[in-house]
Image 1 (cartoon, rainbow, N blue to C red):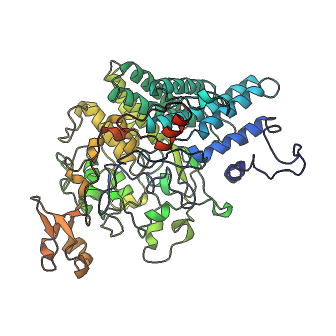
Image 2: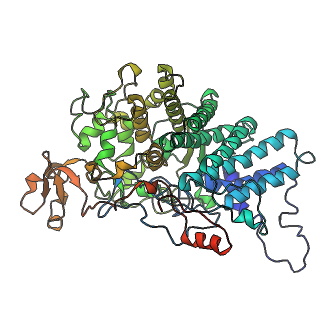
Image 3: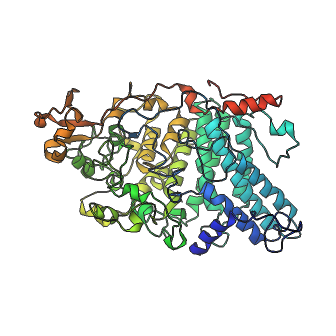
Amino acid sequence: MKRKLIIIIAAVALIFSGCEEFLDRPSRTTMNDQNYWTSENNLRLFSHGFYLNYFVGYNSSWGTAYTPLRGYYLSDDFTSTGKQWGFETQPPSSRASTSETPDWLSTYCGPTWNFAYVRKSNLFLERIETMKGDILTEEAYNHWSAVARFFRGYEYSRLVSVFGDVPYYDKVILDSEMDLLYKDRDSRTLVMDKVYDDFVYVLANMRLSDGNAQYLNRYIAAGFIARFMLFEGTWQKYHLNNTEKAKKYLQLAVDAANLVMASGKFSFTSDFRSLFGSMDLAGNKEVIMYRHYDAALGVTHHIASYANTTESQPNSGNLWLAKSFICADGQVYQSSTLPDADKLDFVSMIATRDPRFEATFWDAPKKEAATLLLSDKFIDRIGPTYYGGSYPAQYGSNTNTNDAPVMRLGEVVLNWIEAKAELATMGGPAVSQADIDASINAIRNRPLDAVAIGKGIQKTTPLSLASLPDDPERDADVTPLLWEIRRERRMEFVYEHSRLLDLKRWKKLSYMDVTTNPDLHLGLWIDFPVEYPEWLIAAKVGKLKVQNGVGDVITYDGTNAAEMVGYYIPENIAPRDAFTDRVYLAPVGMTQIAEYADKGYTLTQTPGW
């Protein structure tokens, strides 16, 4: 069935394409808008045309949009050599697109000013309406309307996360409807209230199963609804101080996640690495939806190759990220009683931290990573063993075939517990220990794989509400419980979709300012004479630098090898350009503003730009 689904997705792009007919008459063999909307199966086929845009997984071939490791790397978690990549400093000349291929603004983790999929979902809804009664039963009509409304809500959730206010459309707009085509931006709250209504409909009407577990169903949709409603609920709280809307959206996040968690269909029975490096995620009970790759069908990607320990990782984990990992005894490193927990070197970090640290990072310095902290998270345990040799196709180039988790239980439960904790700060029920056990502690109780067990890795002690860690790094405006929930997200989602979006919704982009967060420009503690003597060479004179225990920067001069012990400083590192709060939202293009003006209309620029 997976092979069939891949073929369907590849073919759906051709549904409405074809050559001009010699005779101007309907084709008997080519699907078109006049003869297409005749069966429920055709609706299913049309819906698959949305999949590659919304369920990207590891993308395909060399594609990087919406991919882990190669796409989501702008945040406070990652550091590069040279000047740090930053936010845009002026509005672009143009930002519009009508492409239906996966594309994005990487600095905002979302789409460009493109309403092609809004139109496509509205067209889908209108065509479904014409099939009601004669072709579709009431149940089928409700389901397919829910599918179309889910995709519309998905697209508007992403557009709003990037731009804030956007024009809202709930129908296909004709070229002659100038006032609608050139309407100004609607408020994000108006738009997200419409999205909320769509999502409520989805949760009430989408099928629990559409015949194949990887076809869009209510559980998959609920996972994404929880994600988007958590984002908007916390944005309303921290940016707009709108408690009423925050509670409304957060409650829907809780309800959506509850649907998945209460189903009994999903559980934490997989080790962490198998979620990302497996060649077949079918049957993995933590994975709610995944994207399958098959070399025989030409459906491959390149993400594993950049985790194979040979390809470079120009953006890699920094000291700030490493410090955030909880110790296996459930304490922050400053107060942990584990031996060497306060040492921030490779060996000590692997031995004392939550198992996800070992499952995310290589356990020794690697020159292929900008900070020497290389992630091998998105490949199986076998792939890196080919280091220094020739990689089989599944581990090299753009011919990788490990499956990509698209929605998994780990995200659902963390969205759920955070939404509940946020609601508790606004008068909702207090989070209970049972809630923590069903979410954070369920994650911490995942099985370990044989490699981790062989290294002596231990599961992390469960989190207890009665004795939350006392983290000296905690922001004063964040409760201890929310701080630990945020920590859990950070450990769980390294290089995945979450971190920059989390910083934005929490209003914490200040973490990316090195003037107040110097750990951004440091790697782990390295004893170069012992751990990495191969870099004590003439080529590194004047380039290799460390920061020692008292904060002094030591530069290798060819004679001071014994002093090269400290936090690694990536080569030629320099701060990103200064930024202000305006970068929480993207500007629209100047060309689009001018086009509106030429037609006698106004397109308002994003505040601050």
